[in-house]
Amino acid sequence: NLSLKYLEPDYFYKDTLHRSANIRETGTLNGNLVFCMFCSYFLIYFSAWKGVKSTGKMVWVTCTMPYVILTILLIKGLTLDGSGEGLKYLIKPDLAEFGHQDLVRAAIQILFSTGVAFGPIIYYGGSRKRAEKIITASFWIPVANSLTSFYAALTVFTFIGHVAHELKLPIDKVTTQSLSLAFVAYPGLINLVDGKNFWAVIFF
Image 1: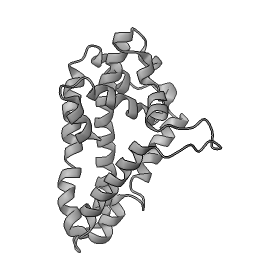
Image 2: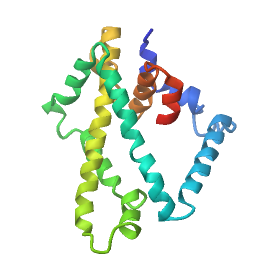
Image 3: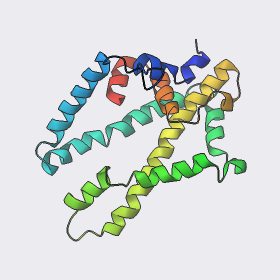
């Protein structure tokens, strides 16, 4: 029962965010999102209220659980018809795309992930041992970040390949070159897993 509309960002923007047509139409508060936001603030506060001592314990959950869920989704994705074509589309290089603006943005994103507003700077300032060399962490954190992004992409493109197979369309016709692809692919893949509501809550 797949439809091309599930690969478009309309559901995310219209049904979930209730985004207005333009900036002049502010609309009202989205009750579901407001509730989720306060739940997030509540959890973040009690994860960090004792400083590094409490956040260090939370990291064991927040850093390992996404890998567990990604692995489960990847295994499920690999069992779907057409997943191989999706992986081939991801891995096979297209030399015409080298130097394209989207490729440059991907490289910039890796640099942003080690920026002031993200975890590494906090780690450098408060969690590392005195004798630990900063240059070591400065090298391995971007490497781990890049490998994680690639691992997540494997999961996404198994689903994209499956959708292309079901709709009998070329893969480049069912992908969107934007951040919205993740917001479409992951919910779509979770929807195919047994106990989907449970995994959706755990994943997001």
